[in-house]
Picture (cartoon, one colour):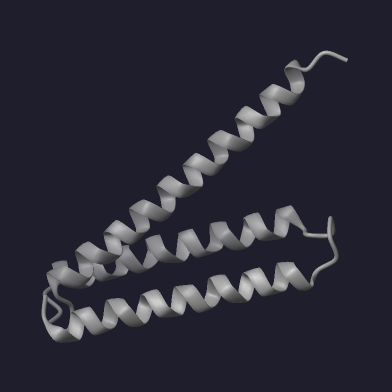
Length: 107
């Protein structure tokens, strides 16, 4: 990996940290119990969709022979998209398991 790619990845990591910190600040300033789960879920799904779209765009550009796109960037973006998607799947699995546990509780 060349120096430019490493710097690019580091800047993306820093940007993601700032976004996460901003989201935590927004949750901290909201009144307890007032967080809108549906909005947070929608925002997260939009981010995952954007990550996957970016990976697809880079992949297509690389396949077309775009000299500004290198294989390392394509592979990194595809791995980011994969990790994001797997995280969403795990969250979904836990929500479904929690729902099932609640439905199985005896009153």
